[in-house]
Image (cartoon, rainbow, N blue to C red; front, top):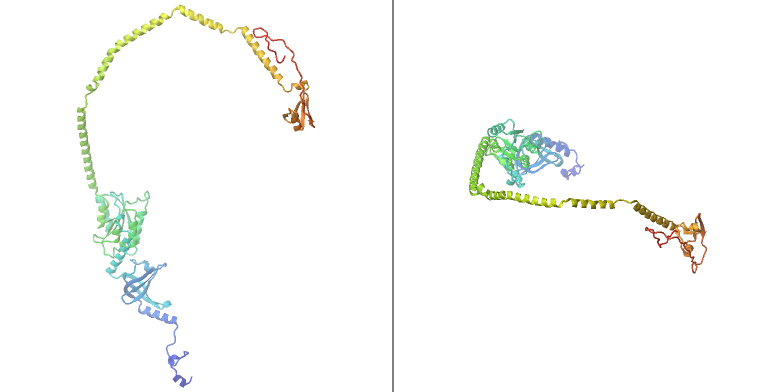
Length: 498
């Protein structure tokens, strides 16, 4: 390239890039520059603490947390990996001011820088109270703190479940107070009461007591006490966690919350059925004083005894007054006694009259029993017996009459036999199983059978003419001698079969 051309052309506007003498800045790729920036930022800001307000908080399905920290004039993106997010002692929310500890790095894919958070804490008590107030408003809007949800505590619980640390002074105070007031069976569910994982353990314990069934290996509690000693708001924060508040509100067993001292208040207190200022006060609320109960029972027994005695005395007085107004037994029985005397006097005379009447009736009956009357009665009875005797001539006459009647019926039966005319040369004309009675029936049948005395033959009807007047043959019956009647006289009736 000519010098004239170089003099008339700006080097910055060259069309092609080329090496120049003395140039010690070789061109870098985008990836190389991004990697160089990443190493520079991470080396320079390997450990930083940033104070800001959370914005755009989001928890991914993988468990990682993505958010932005901002102040009045700047914003920086942040990410917290799953392991660190699981160790957070509180639930991050938008608007909460925190102090995040971690390192700065870059995200080459989008040319952004961000902070990788290792630890995140609330920025002072004011931020903690703001977070607490936001959670309280959220749960109150769901109705978890409504007074209508509160249940009455059982008067005399047989089993009490306690959710607290097994090594602290709280459980000893509760046991000592219960022993002094009214010994009761206690089931302890040991949990952490502060620090990482404490809220999950407390919620699991409350739900565990609620899920116990009657008749199981362990008795189901009638009352649950969630207790912890005093401490700062950070120490008591586990009982402000949403998981604990929901577990207490959903518990099917009445719950007493005894967290901290009298001036300490947690969200668990609002969700419980009863709040106790101290764990010792919770034990006092749980059971009555046994000595006071015995004294009350004794007093009630005495009052019942006095009431019974007073009632019996009053009833006795009323009975005496009623007895004075009632008539005496002699007055009530006087009419019956008088009537008894009257009946006794009339009994002897009545018996005498009755005996006299019986004697008169016996005399009349005895007069009627004379020997002549008895002999007359016997004679009439003998005559009736004699008339009832069976005479041989009478039996013979009856037998003859029955034989004659049987013979008459036999002859009548023989005379109506349909085969009897066949013996005299007649024939019976049949069309199948039907008797042919006329020429028209025969012509209609066409083929007939002729039945004779010794058999039957078939015949075919070809034609015929009905007779104008059927021949009449006078048949005279031979006369027979007249029979004699039962008395031996002749009768004018003729015998049909003679």
